[in-house]
Every structure is written in C-alpha cells, then in structure tokens.
Amino acid sequence: MPIPQSGILPAASAHGLFVMLRRRLGRRIDDALRSMLAAIPDRIDNVALEAPETLTLGVVGIGANTWADLFGEARPQWLRGFPRISGAIHPAPSTDVDLLLHLRGERCDLLYELGERLVVDLAEWFDPVETTACFRYREGRDLTGFVEGTENPVGDERATVALVGEEDAAWAGGSYVHIQRYVHRMNEWQKLPVKQQEAVIGRTKESDEELSDDDKPLTAHVRRVEIEQDGEELEILRQSMPYGTPGGEKGLLFASYCKTPVNFEKMLARMVSPTADGRVDHLLNYTRAVSGAAFFVPSREALASLAKS
Image 1: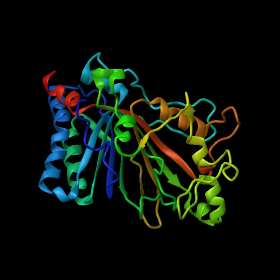
Image 2: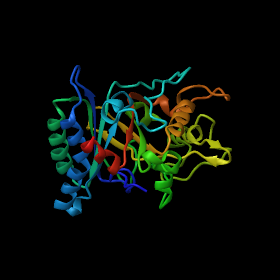
Image 3: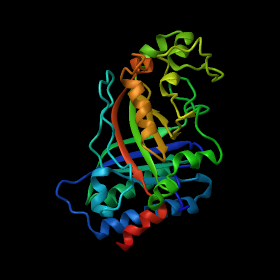
C-alpha cells in the first residue's frame, strides 16, 4: 500500500487549521507549482521533526476542476465535486475552491507559521478563500456539548474506511475528503433542556451513550447518518473540530475522509432532504452549513510524481 499523507489517520489533535484556496483566474499551472505541491508532505514532516512533541500532521487535497491540469487524464475513479442534493430543505452549499490544506498538531503557532508559508508560496497560483483555525474542546466535544466523532472507526479499521485500496489500485493510499463549515445557533441551542438536546442528537450528553430506538426520534442526527447497505453500516473517518470566538461566530468545521465519496453523499442527503420516511435532521434547526467542498488527497507517492511529470 502506498503511504498516505500524514494528516488522515492519526487520532485527533489539539489544534487544526483548514485553508481552502481557489485557482487564480487565468494563471496557468506549471512545473514550478507541481514541484511545490509535491514537496508539501516533506515540509510538514520537517516541522514535525524539528519539534517532535508537536505531532504536526497535514494533507494537501486537490479538487476535481484542477485535477486534470495537474495530473493529466489519469484520475481517481470517483473524483467529483461537492454533491448537490435534490430536494434539500436545509442548505448544503458548494464553495468554489480548488485546493485544501488541512494542518493539525499540538501547537497552533507552528500550524500558523507553516500555513502562512504555504499560502505565500502558493500565492502566484491560488488565493485563499476560507481559513478556519480550530481547537479541541474538552474531551473531543463539539461546542454543543456533545462528543464529536463517537462512531469513528478504531485501530486498523481507520485505514480500511479512509484509504482507497485495490478497488482503484492506481490511487491506493489516497482518500476522498469532504469539508463543511457549520455555524451554530448557540443561543437557541442552549435554551433547549438537556433531554431535548439529547433527542436532537440521539445520544446522551454527559455519558455519550446512544439512545434506545424507542427514545431516538427518526429526526435525530445519529439516526439520519446511520445507513446500512448490504448488511454493513456505511462509515467515514471524521476529523472534525470546533472553532469560534467568545461573543462571535462559532461552530464546527466538519471534515470526513473515506475510500469513496458515496458514504458522505448518502449521509448528507439523509440530513438535508426528506427521504422515504419524509424526515430530515433536526440538528440542522440549530446549525447551518455555510460552505462545502470535496477533494481527493493523493498518496505521498502519487503527489510526489507531480515533480517528475
């Protein structure tokens, strides 16, 4: 198996930095850019080696509209843009971006320095569109107070879920990543009694236990994203983190990695659009997506090949 980029599989970090960039109008992709992108994993590793205690990790992801100009005709078999959900009654906007930098680690100052250098170096070809600095909240909770990513795969299963394998061997070790930034309506949320909050999520708030089927509404968030196909539950690897400022905008930067985009697309559809049961996710009464994008994160070997093309 080719080596995946470092930011996909490891457990949650204390800090995260997500930068989405758009290609500059009329700027031609050239060998200088290809070499620069190919070197990003090594640059992330260099920061990690200089300060091992920081556990600095990261990925660079490439959008469908820019892929061919970098790699030519060869492409991952499921590469496509962010889904447009038919019949959606909650927003799931698609943001016009072409490149993702997802950096994470134990020191936000080093993430800032690394992110700043990368954005400056890429400025000839890409403009930053949205930058979100995130943090770990308490024991991995969202700002709603509920644990985030409870259903994440563990151990070796993380790679099985997140990484492309023999089904698309040319791009093995890569991953499809989906990004959404949610803005929480915290005032309205905090007015809800805990029991009502738990019904909206489908889990207990303090102990993080899933509610019984009798107590878990069809509109509960957990119920909307639990999907079985051929007897197996669809899974994604979440690397989501909260963000915000006291008195200012706050929410969740959702990030999921998977060996296929289909799992995320089906989960999102059940959240925002009435399905066969006519329900949607009631968590979306208290938070809204304001951006969304899809990328493919090539393996280190595939990304390094850009320098040789």
